[in-house]
Length: 226
Length: 226
DNA sequence: CGCCCATTTGAAAATAATCAATGGAAGTGG
DNA sequence: CCACTTCCATTGATTATTTTCAAATGGGCG
Image 1 (spheres, helix red, strand yellow):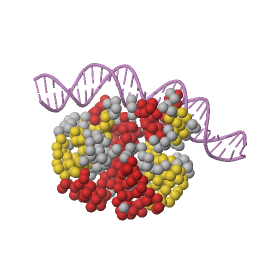
Image 2: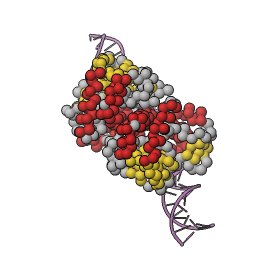
Image 3: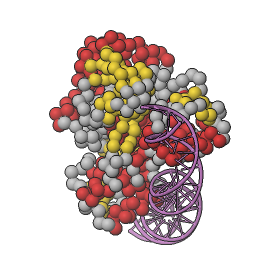
Image 4: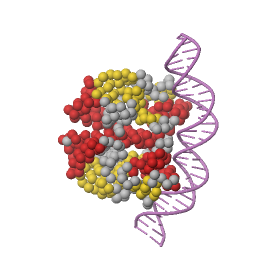
């Protein structure tokens, strides 16, 4: 039962520039058939099990893709930020719920129309396969992180991934500490302690609760490998 | 940098019977263009970074897909058993190394030929996308397992997944305890202790080191959820 | 038959989770 | 606009699970 996943154009996965240009170009053709929608904080985009009628692209804001386990534990499979696609990999229904973390605007594409376009334009279906490949690669990186990294290594990797989405060495964290914990397989307290430690060692500086700057990127990279 | 992944026809991912029939049928067309190869125990199929010239299908035996971290820790991304495809999702080069766990026979397909076939036969490329979707879904399940499950929950899930590949309630474990640990994000010792506990509570019985039977499947299912 | 390597088991140490309390920011309503 | 309320974040102390270190057992392969 496949589900939603994210790939941004400034992807966290390194890819030859030419290829991502192709990807951006051919998918730009989709924008004509999309409708813009807006979600308020904590508003659901879809629920797990809903018929997967649409694809989405985040324009502004942030969305979390999450599942709730039998005993109440929550797992966040993905954060979708500006530029990310949601639901490209769904089968008949979504396997995750998606909720806005902050006020968010998205483009909503009819899956049916996208598939019709893709059938005519091989370049579009090729782009979709590329996006799935990148999603798979990202999922593998995360498996490695979740299976073999310590708390600090996970936090450091997480911050570096987010920082790749901006050019100014800053990181926006619209989500709560609990969200981050559920994403990294840690508790809120462990996340908070790691942040405090990074602050006191001068590796990061905080500018409001939801924005911070990476003062020593090299030191952070060191922390990702033990 | 995408890599290899596994999907069997008796997939661990539940899918409507009609769909998997389509998948099996259209991919059977590939068998004509494949060559059979054999690997001895611990022999590499390919290394990380090798040009991804081929796809493979396991006929008999078992293969592990693994990466080695900077400090020597090893991560196993996937076990490929009979029926599984390897390398379908690779880009230009393989992102994982693949090694035979025991003596293994595979079919080797030229990637170029498969892609030519897929370009002519939309059903084939559709099947490839389906396989990638299933691979992505499996990767998500594993992220959940690695991020939010205890040692015993991981072992129980692992054994149940393997048991779905056979109809007789038995499980073959061609890999070592260390392999299993590297796959589940645990140490060899923790894996061994969990097995001992399952044996002493009568949930599993051992028939040789590399084969066991699940005596109380329901009890094992209970252990996957806390 | 014997050696070697994987496994099992035990005890100690470390990492992260849990429990608990305080502090602070954001949002609500008067 | 301010005060109140609520939720989120931080910090501390304790507990639990898993890892690490170490030794002994056992099976499989030559």
